[in-house]
Length: 330
Figure 1 (cartoon, helix red, strand yellow):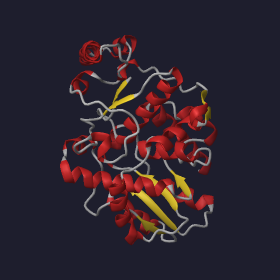
Figure 2 (cartoon, helix red, strand yellow; figure 1 turned 135 degrees about the horizontal axis):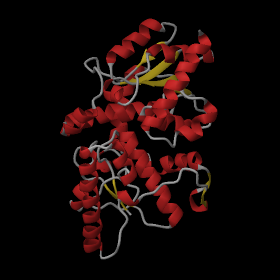
Figure 3 (cartoon, rainbow, N blue to C red; figure 1 turned 180 degrees about the vertical axis):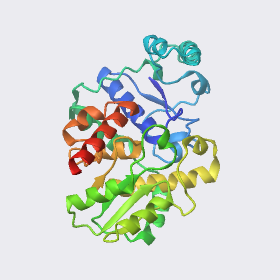
Figure 4 (cartoon, rainbow, N blue to C red; figure 1 turned 90 degrees about the vertical axis):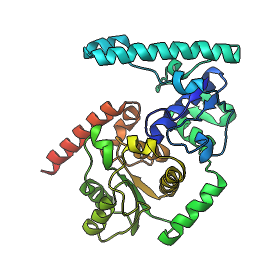
């Protein structure tokens, strides 16, 4: 399988797709190969700009155009009654078939591409060579351990970034999203996070927040003064827009990714993390901390099911949970 990483979604959505593809390959004894030359989060070398290699990589340019993710079924497309969606489906099917042909011509054998992946979250994974014997969430954690290795120079730059924050060994972590996430689901206010922290009666006196809007950081400081707050969000940031991020290049993109990935490293070492099931970084971290996870907008017993849903399903669960919680409080 030649997996095209970094097509059009946010980093953690793309990263999760890749981990799912790796699990599929491991279960079915298929060699996994990576293509990330044009990754939307990359500067020059895609994955290799920030992470150590973990598998063979290829750089044939045809993957950029002809190796795409799966598209909705014909039934779903016709259900929308949209001419635009139908044209997009036809174009995508053509591109995928061209990718199959070009991969065969180049590698002299049939190769699976992104659109072939049919992932089943309900499977039990038994891969003794990697210590995997459990469900998807168990296997996911192992796959992160295998792949999440930041380059030494990036880790060193990250240490310099967080040194002035003077983070203690034990601290609370959270992500509060702004920006273009509003196009997918309702944004959660800071009150939800503050109330959850207070209800949990944590002993930590410092919290690190990953946010894309500096005003959110300032609001947390005002509304929750009993905690010291830290962030790597820059004062000029007013909300992340994925389409805008994808077009910036070079040092500017690297600087943004450095702060983002360093923030994630910090949160992965937090003693207690709270986040939403509707945002990529939070969902990743909730899976990382599972079963010691604390979703702010989903009951813990439903989490195993919710993580398998697309954003529309997770958004619906989030709205219902928060609406019911509000009624209970009222």
